[in-house]
Image 1 (cartoon, rainbow, N blue to C red):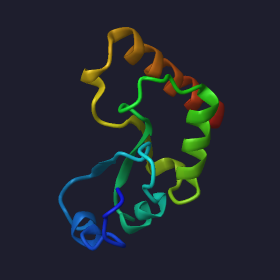
Image 2: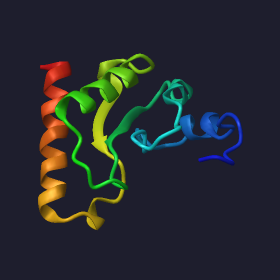
Image 3: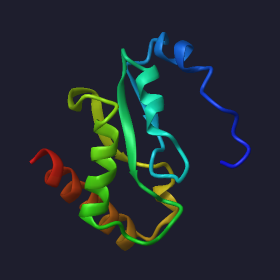
Image 4: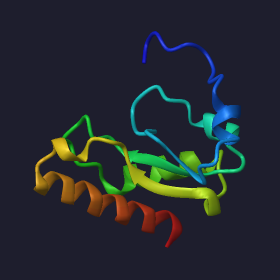
Length: 110
């Protein structure tokens, strides 16, 4: 987001919340993955499928996004997920994206 302020001032409050897990749309461009370091007590759902684009990510692209998240978040706190907005895709496209998300996860984690 071009006019987004620097940093994420709300992370301390979010980390102190009662929620055990937080979902972050990380497949969108320009989002800095280092923000997950501000959530040390949470499991984080990291979006690795961009749902604003109907292009189906390859498993290799998904694997790259997962590896990027693992640079900031240990595997035991990482939940691989799509970004929000699946309902706007056709069933076929959504299924292909989710299938490749699983295949990409398997490339990284096995």
